[in-house]
Length: 506
RNA sequence: GGGCCUCUAGCUCAAUUGGCAGAGCAGCGGACUUUUAAUCCGCGGGUUGUCGGUUCGAGUCCGACGGGGCCUACCA
Image 1 (cartoon, chains in turn blue, cyan):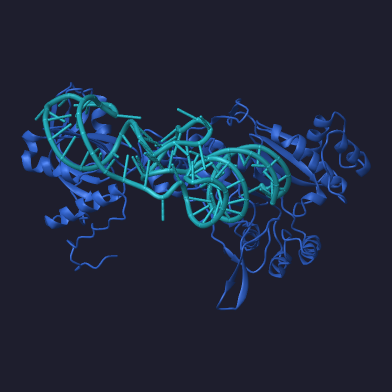
Image 2 (cartoon, rainbow, N blue to C red):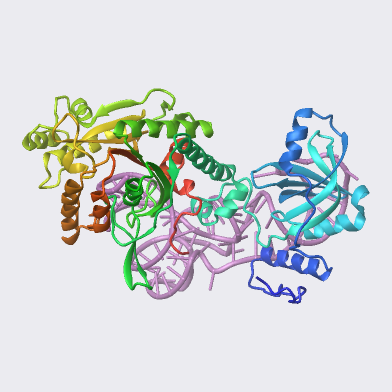
């Protein structure tokens, strides 16, 4: 914040090392101050949004060169300027991209004001204009100005309106990207509409939204590398959460029977077009439900969100159409693997047989993998990317989903699904394991891996196990990546769906 | 992590074999009362990512470092 009493006319324009266009704009700021005019006033007149005028008049099909008699004050960013001799054209744009033309004529504003306008206003400035709503001789809706004020002087030139910024500049200068590129503006609003719809669907099913800690003592709820930090007050090593799961289950144990959270999780891993260091997870748990009931909820969440943003039919990466309103496929992991390899395999298929099948299909295996891990690897390498239409892949070997409940019918399997759309894993669901003895065994096994140096293994969370011992109801649970959901609807990369993604310092 | 490509004016991009670093938009001065990336006349704007090397001479060739992108492997 600048000091209010600071001499505003201090010439700071003698900075020869600045790029020419920035120096020129600083000189214009100085000139405003020298005139006693604030380049950054507290407020400017504004009676209507540009959108208000567009909404009111666009449908009326006014004749060219007509006057409405309506006096308005509007504000917006100058994105186009045409300073001719006695008549200036300005195009203003407001935050959602709505544009409106302004005309300043010698006859209406006078010689002096027109000259001031030409000398002081640049593309990029935020401007207030007062005048009458008219149409130009070409029939374009415009404000015929009787007065104008600088709302905020811009010191840096905007990029070329007609050539897209390169990809790095779009992300590093997202604020500029938002000014110049409609897709960037739409992304912000699409994501907000998705969030709003998700919350409405949860609310309509009597789910309660909670907030749980980001700073955690132990690393749990998923297999991933955490970020580490330090809490000075307790002189305690802390982790940033990698999942929401354990705290939401604690809430459910306490009787928050239908619970969800939408929040940031953090994973200290590789970054690419589908992975960010911090990303938003949607997790939800439904007491007295199971993996089928939570699959229904998930489907409703996604369908409603798609409708909310008008993207119920999206183009897949292979060019085909995905209609999210059509019924979604349910198939078991072993059905899909059997289809892909051309012979029947199931939970009882021997490790040696699966190893042979993997070799035949050139799927590389790690030494020591068990039958379940090999089956999963075959699925991931041969099947997952081919599942374009929405598919719940169900019933995993117990060894690869340690936090899901044993299958009610098939020994060796657990009740878990992965939701695949457009060849990408969008979310996971479980019939949640709630036997605290088995839970302890599984977490101890994980913690031994962690102690042995596996950076992705979960640590033993004694408080979570204590909570489980107070009795968690049978429940269905799901987790889904918000950013990936938005990617599905928009076809954009993850760096476009996150407003300000992490970048290396310049 | 491995491989390939890339970094030049505010923005988007050129620059032949190693031989004066250019264009469009933007900016500055001038003309123009209906423009829509207007038109016309004139002008300015560069540490070619950084450091080093080869050379009479480097945007261009070589090396190192940094940023970015694509492919590839792993995680959502």
